Length: 432
Image (cartoon, rainbow, N blue to C red; front, side):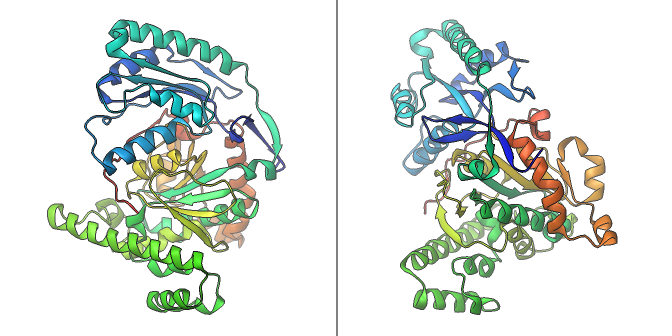
């Protein structure tokens, strides 16, 4: 595919583009998971688009009941955020009737966000079998409408202006920090240079790399080899109002993450680095975090820190989303924030996918790639690059970027081929 054109779904009402056009069935409480599942089963095997990339997807989860305070706020933000992701064509809410998320005002709240294809079925009002029948009827109509949509070719720059990419990592090993994460960093810089927004997350996985993160607040050349304390003093003394506010935000969430990690360690033991990380050659969390930070590139300043699941501005800047370290939970938060595509590095291999956004897996571990090709999209042939004296940046721009644009234009990622439409809600996450 030419780097000049990307085929996307244009939504003029919302001012966005989607790289998929899924129909989403969203239970508003776990009690009605089976109702949603039965509606989805009726459309098993139904797909549309040039690559048959669009589906009816059911967002099964175990939340939606007896939430309290901030716990309720986060769960609500995730459900609404995923339901309004640009890759979603229509949403069917299934409620039981007695839960706090089951009220029909949810439908009007999506109308406020210019989501016009949304319906709400309440099982206690409709009846169990009737709810299934009504859901099938609604979805069947939407499928016919969705099949009539066609992609529109935009220039790469036009597409980037409305695109939000997420970058993440999981099941890491030594090759992740040495090669795969730096490759993601080149992708991050490439898309930011052309106007796309990029977001990263996984707060526990920046612990030990605070210096690298804090330096992204300012572009001062004099801070290349200074300590966290010196960077902090410099920003407080010479930084803009925005930079000082950002510094305080980052300092607060890092301090809180350390406290959270310490308290968890007292109860259940050390969780980071994981046993797999250690087997893969990562001896400490700091070592893992330093490798992790390569995935956000080198050229662009950090624009802001966002709460978990918060909408990511489409303004061509770099954002950090405060969130859990677990792969699926961090991915879900970014997708709720409006991410259309996720680039994800892995050393040991993971099949993790996302509910409505393609997740492209990148590895530099030859053994992992050979054993797990069915779930790895992009491989970095390190030995070959060294032998040919080819830079990683050059390889990424020649081989990876065209593949990413093909996926944006409809080609299925490996996670989609495996039908890894994963979804989970982390309610009790910390508040910025």
